[in-house]
Image (tube, rainbow, N blue to C red):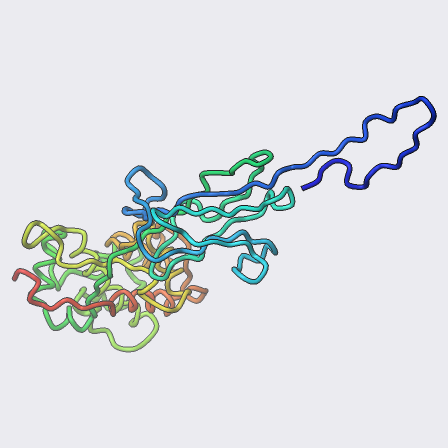
Length: 311
């Protein structure tokens, strides 16, 4: 890339006098490179990551700055060990954004966008790394499962919190401060059997979600492993709004819903004064039905058989 003398020079020599400083300079094109990693723990780029060993991933420089991989963008795909490189760059490319096309079923972690820096003439801008977490397939259990297996409900809830059973108040389990929000003071079993939409839909879906989260939170069974994996990924729902809500509920960002997170989201959407967040609103967006639908997506994931529970 010519940086000095691009306009050329006019020879204006006069007798006996040399014409000097007719200089030319060029900046040699450079490249950017990085590595694609698999984030084994979902906590961003750390020492426990491993080089990407799955299908090649497209990396692109967003020339037109629309955050979409389209015609005109400079791109490449990852090779062995997740390595990638894009060459032939000039000073015009400095400051452009570098993105990956996020692989299906993965969660992007760590740095989501890199930037083309100037490594100097002929240099290499290194370390533009991307990391992705591949959550294991999530499992869930519907309100109907729990309603029809009260013995399993009592076992698992009692293991999570001593003394709790199917007859324990929904409001106690969900730690409500305002005890008049849900009429009738239903038990957790009553909530699973609630009929109708709105707040009753939320009762059913959140009660089942809480129980599944409790199972996941307490190692049990052979080898001390939990019988359920109440996690979510892009495969949990094709609706991006559902995934967005689940990410809001997932306060510690580990892609798995904990009982405290389920309860916190319910208190939030119902405007309880003990709510830990203010992400939702009873009549706002996301509202009751949105949060209930997000729990439904979790509950409707792969259903393990009742036989996996040690009764």
